[in-house]
Image (tube, rainbow, N blue to C red; front, side, top):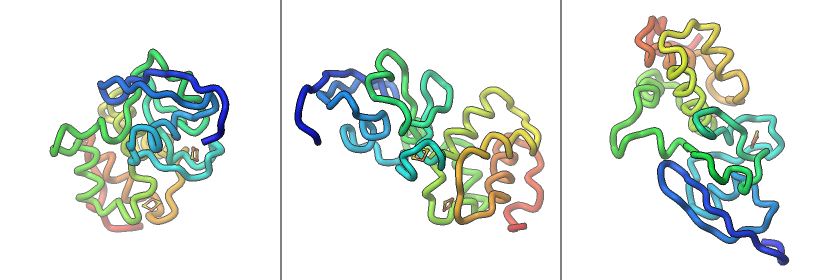
Length: 166
Ligand code: FES
Ligand code: FES
C-alpha cells in the first residue's frame, strides 16, 4: 500500500458495516478483496472491460474496479457472498450448478449478481433479455449457452435442453 494520507471509510457490505483506514485511491474492488477478504468478487482487467468485478450498489450492478471505495459510502453493497442465504444457494446459483454452467468459475460471481438483478426486475425474462443481462461479463469457458439456460430455468421458464452445450 502506498504511503501518505489515509482515509477512514465505512462501507455497508451484505448488511454489515466495515470501517477501514484506506488510501484514497482504493477501489471498491480492492476494498472488498483486500480489506475485508470478500474474494468472491473477481479481479480481471481492472479497467472496466471484463465485467467479472460486478457487485450491486443499492441494488444496481456496478463495476467495482471503476468505483472508489469512498464513493460507496452511504450505499448498500451486495456481493456474491451476500446472495446465498447461509448454506442455501439462491435459485440462480442452484440453476448454474444444475446446468453445468460453471467451468473455471471466474465469471460466475458476476453472472450471479447480474442474473439476480435481472430476475428482481423481470421475473420472467426472455432469452434476449438474459443475453443482454450477461453481455457485459466475459466468460472464457462456457460459450454462454449453459449460463443463459440456467438463468431462464431459475426464472421458471423453459431452459431448453437442460444443459446440453450448443
Ligand atoms: S475487473 Fe472490473 S471490469 Fe474487469
Ligand atoms: S466459467 Fe470460466 S470464465 Fe466463465
